[in-house]
Amino acid sequence: MNRVSGIALCLTAFILMWGCTQSLEKEGALAPAKDADVLEVQSFVQKQPLSSEEVKEVVQGLLDQAKQVQTQITEEDLSGATQRSATYFSADAAPAGGSATGQASKATQQGLRPITSGEYNSSEKIRTVMQSIYTNKAADEYCAELFKGSDPILKEIDGVLYFSEDQAVLSPEAMDYMVDTSVIMRQTVDEITVEMTMQTQGSTAIKKSLHLKKQGEEWRLDSVVFPQRIQDDGN
Image 1: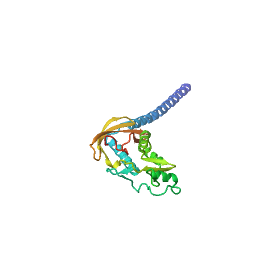
Image 2 (image 1 turned 60 degrees about the vertical axis):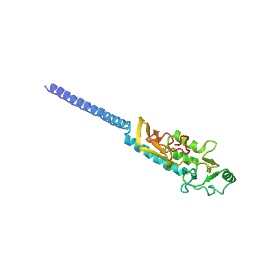
Image 3 (image 1 turned 90 degrees about the vertical axis):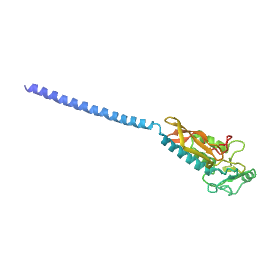
Image 4 (image 1 turned 120 degrees about the vertical axis):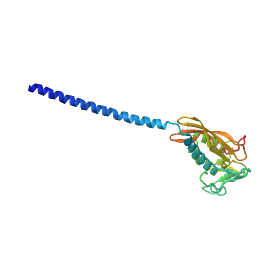
């Protein structure tokens, strides 16, 4: 009888231990499952397309940044007379690091004036700030418009940045992107194409497509929105 009771107690203990083990294993399996569900929900939310209002907000923010920076770099009134704000750079002082050199004098004689102070007084600084607003491709496109070609707007000589006195550049203030008219033409996780009405002073309003790309967690403009030269179509 005692032997039977002992066996019964052992079986009971074994069953209880097995039940506890199964419960712990089940709880252990549920924890990763819950974590996986949370990650899946977060991933799903991140991959959802932006709403129309969210896209407009992103576009407006990038346009405001581009307009502010590009206005600081070069300005022009629409009559064709080039103007540059002393707030952003000075063209009259000697180049930093010493008096005007023979190279600087020669450059001035060729119609180039030194930009000797200000926030964007070097090609590197201009390129860096453009890459915070544009994709690398679009930033290169913008810098090429400023620095390349047979008659560049800006030129860097011996570490000093110069601008061409006979260049007429288009001020971003002359261009109006009507963000409220934006229509999303295409949208993926990391690319957006929107179409909106844009008008340059003195020209007819046109439809303009803007392409945006995501770099990391930030959106960037993938095309130059404020060209420095007046285009053939007047915009």
